[in-house]
Image (cartoon, rainbow, N blue to C red):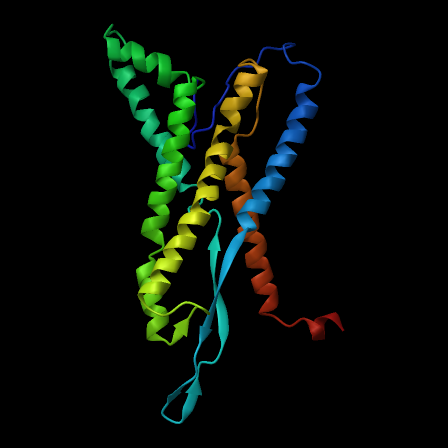
Length: 240
């Protein structure tokens, strides 16, 4: 079963007249539910409160403000899905170079990893997404660096001592919030595979979970940029 660069299943040919009457309305309902769930998860975040103590620098008083550290549920974005799909494409590419071979490993790869609908492939794809989610989050968010910066500028989390306790607390929260994010990415990526298994390979599933994730992410970023631009301008004189 062919796949695109994002790991979504692509069905190039559709048999005319093979679709059932409920396929189109069911696809619309499923896609609407998926988009709503993606929007909800993409905007979900854990806000860790941070308090900055007042300090004197020369004759000026600094600090005394409160803010928060936003930790998104989907901290890694779509990168783990791309990594996992690219890694799983390597066995299929190796089989293409040995198409005329009758080796046992070629038959094993053709059976489990080429079609894309085998449970072994789905389980491997899901586990790789979970692994790459934790890996990518660990290299993009460093609790040690964040805790050191907070201590340097007089910031602290209420109820948590500065330094090592803050680092441990951030690591604990990050690991707990990354788990539902990784499971969410895995389920979104498996949507086209599960759909083809349930409704048959001759049915058309126009949008994969990863494609929806990218489109929703771009739309949300565009809306945020428009809101930030509107907040920077004053249209009172124009509106009057």
